[in-house]
Every structure is written in structure tokens, then in C-alpha cells.
Amino acid sequence: MNKRITLFMLTFALILTLLPVSVAQADAKADLQKNVALIISAFAKQSGFTAADVDSIITDLNNDNSREVVVWIKHPMDSNTDFYLGVYSLGTTKKLQFEKLYSSDYIYDSYVTVRTIKNPRYKTSLAVVSFGNSYIDAEVYTTKYGVFKRVGSAYMSYSMPNGVYMKDINGDGYEEFVGLNNEYDLGNEQLSNAEYPVGKVIYKWNVNKLTYVASQYGSDGKLDSTRKPVGSLTSAQALAMLKKAYTMQIGMSGYYEFDTVRAKMKPSFSNNIVSGFIRNGLKYDYGFGYKPIYQTNEDNVWLLPKFTNAPVQFNISTDKNRIKIVQKQKKEYSGGSYDRNATAVLVKTKYGWKIDNYGYNF
Image (cartoon, rainbow, N blue to C red; front, side, top):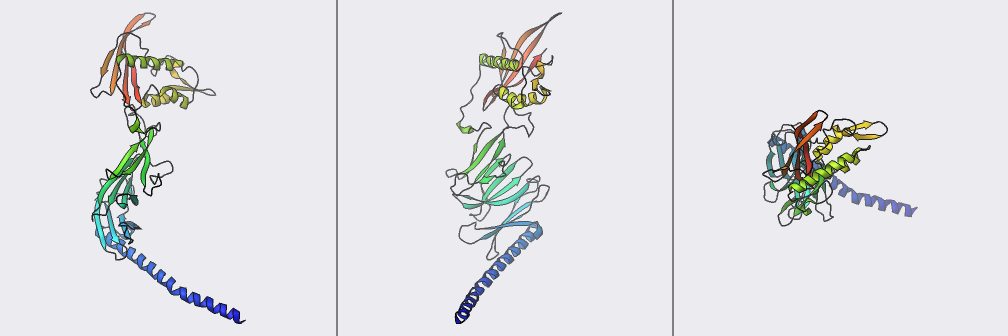
């Protein structure tokens, strides 16, 4: 019986010992929550908004083991308000920085948020990220100098398929910007947003340039900076390319799925031509698949002209990125013949020269 009483008293004494600590922790937490509320109220008042318009995060921006409250004005997609950003001491509620970072006309069509990002130079910085209808634009600011100083930026068309746009990809403790970019290159101008080929982009902190530097990959997965430069074409090379592409088209006499059509055409034709051909140049036969329309009737609009070994006009654009080939030809029919010009335009892309336009002129 005495042992039970002794055990009870020891347990009760332990509870009494811990109780003041728990109360102190609760009080401290309540004080911090009160400070955050005061900071949000002060920030909202100075920027001309209400507390409900403010979003916030708590972090150690100065890496001095004291925390700050980062506050900003919420900016949904349909907002026409200016964007204010502030930093306050969590412990004292003192305002450290306050600035109207963006005017409404700069971010009128964007959802804007703020995240922390770590890099070797400034340790913890602020990434102000704008999400538009077809882009993600991030600007990185340090608070080290008493002002919001921009030290880097990143731009991408989309996040990664899993929604990630910031990630420590090499496990060094510092985050990179990662995403996908549409390829707005020659030969892609007529594509819809859904048709653009995309390539991965990584923005990594460069310790020499003291900013974020992009490494852009192509839709083929290769790093663009490692590609060999695409050279010029002679008239003979261009003519050989046109003949080879024509032979490939004529050889497409069966039924195909879209992926097979793309694989056959991409080595020679631009994405403008490939996508247009898939949309408008194929006929579907139920149970069989897709067949080129020019193989089923006299509509040869998607069939490349049949160039011969006859002389051609060879015109290069001033920027050296476009070549136009013109060849005079005679078209015979049952009642006689007529003259016409077979034409083709080739464009230089990072993947090589591609046929981007063709047809006949009379």
C-alpha cells in the first residue's frame, strides 16, 4: 500500500514539474500568434488593404536563428491590385522592409505567391512566383542589403507534370527551378498551345555569375548547349532533301496511327507541316486507321512537289535561317500542258533544316 502511495506522489510531483513548462510554451506560442496578427494588421494598413487580403510565412531570412514574418498581398488571377511585400521581426514586430514590388499592370493576369529558396550565396532568399495562363515567372530577392534586391529569375511555360517547379535536384541542400518550356522556334509558329513540343529547363545557381542560369533541353531530351551548330545548305543538298522527303511521302501508302505518321515526317518536315498534315491531310477508314488523303483522290495539297534535277532558284534570307527553292516545271495533261513553279521553303531549327512550306505557283 505504501509503495502505491509513493508511486502516486512521484507521478503527481512530475506533473507539477512539467506543468509550468507547458504553460510557458503555450504562452510563448500565443505571444507569437499575437505578433503575427499585429504584423499582418500593420502591413495591411500601410498597403491599403485589410488583414484578410494578406498572406504570410515565418522563416529565418537572415540565418541568425531569429525568425521573420514575410507578408504579402494576395493576388489571385483576376486581381487588378498592386503587389506589396514586407518583412517584419517575429519577436519584436519591427518592420524591416516594405515595398510595392509590382504594379497591377505588370501582374494583372497572374496568381502570385511567395516561397523561400536557398542558394549558396544568400542562404535563404525569397522567390516571388507568378502563375499565368501559360507561364510561370519567378523572381528571387535577397533581403541582405536592407532592400528587396533581385538576384535572379526563372521563366518556364509549365511546371513539371507532377506540379513541381522548385526542387533540390542534386541533393546539395539548394533548390533549383525546374519546368517545361514550349519551343517557340522556326517551324513552330502555326501550332496551338497544346501542340507545341516542350523541353525541360533547369535554373541552377551559378557561383561565378551569382545568379540563376538556365540549362535548356530540347524535346528530344538533349541539352541544347551541347548541340553542334546547324550549318548552311547548298542548293544540291536542299534539292536532295526535298527528293528524299517526297519519296517518303509517296511510300506512305498504307494505314497508320498518328505516332507513326509523326515519326516518319519529323526528320524532314517542320512541326507546322507535321501537325497540319495530321489535322487535315489524313483520312480515317474505320477498322484500318489513317491514310494520306493524297493517296485516296486527286487532292494533293499535302503532297510535296516532285522536284527534278532541273535547275532551281536558290534564295537565302538575310538572317541565313530560311531557304526558298523554286523550280520551273511543265505539267502535261490530256489536252496539252502548262507551266508552273514548284516551290518549297526550308527553315533552320536546332534539330537541323526542315521543310516548312511547299506547293505550286502558276
